[in-house]
Amino acid sequence: MTKVILFRADSSSTIGTGHIMRDLVLAKQYPKVPEQSDKCPWGAKIIFAVQDLDGNINQKITEANYQLHILKNSGIDELSSLIKEKNIDTIVIDHYGIDAEYEKKLKTKYPSLKIFVLDDTYEKHHCDILLNHNIYANAKRYKNLVPKSCELRCGSEYTLLRDEFIEEKSKKSSKKIESADNIFLAMGGADTQNLNPKILEVLSEFDNIKVAVVTTTANRNLKELKNYVKNKKWIKLHINSEQVAKLMRKSDFAIITPSVTANEVYFMEKPFIAIKTAENQKYMYKFLKKKKFLVLNKFKEKKLKKHLEVLLGQYDKNVR
Image (tube, rainbow, N blue to C red):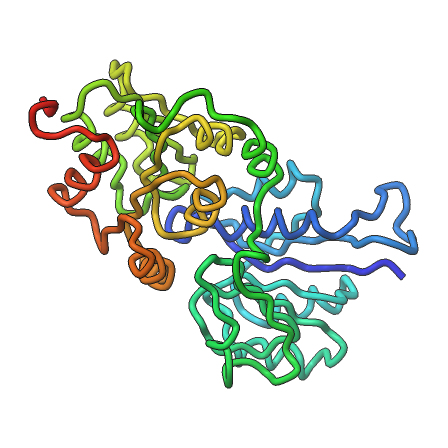
């Protein structure tokens, strides 16, 4: 019988866009049921259950041709009814607001329901499968946090990467790192701390650089960012870009958050500076710091400038 898989995640100007983006990658790993047949004996029917929050990227789900169900709230009752109505076999939960108690209630009501959880922060879960696809993930950390029968999928071998990254990595870069001046800047799709303009202000002190700024319409400060980059030929703003991997490949190094983007930059083998902007990034931050990568616990102008001098190979004499 065809499996029916429900993804439960949200995106917004405050939550960010990372959960939906990685869930779309995960969803692609399930072979689709041909649209002309609801009774196909193979494959999976994918449904996304999301809220209609301010600054969401729900359109990405419909663009990928998945069924979209809008939830009125994040409570368990509406989701439980949807599970029953759609005969859900597996629920994939990628949501910081859903905890082990919530998951246990679903399992109690639907014993045959397979619960597949994505986790970044070593939380307690009541699930059948747990995926922590980050490069820092350690399965041993989940001892006593999940049922003994839970299948753990942890670490870089499980990293969720869009096809574009795999394709772009296979291409050769056109220039050597010694002549570095192309910078990839991505402070998350929502840039909740509005760091893009502050970082660009620091970068403006350096000569002979070009910056590709990647953001999305989930960014509440997009208008301010657009005004900042206006008439600055050394900056190119990319909004809702479909060529992130290409931009990353063509860059000499990146300035990012220690988030899902760090997994992608790590895979692309690009030098980078990671600036922590949220508490859920602490494990990636600690991992990168331990591995001697250039990291900042929070944005600090002077420290960022020093890191940039290291990567650009420029010193005070080259700073305007």
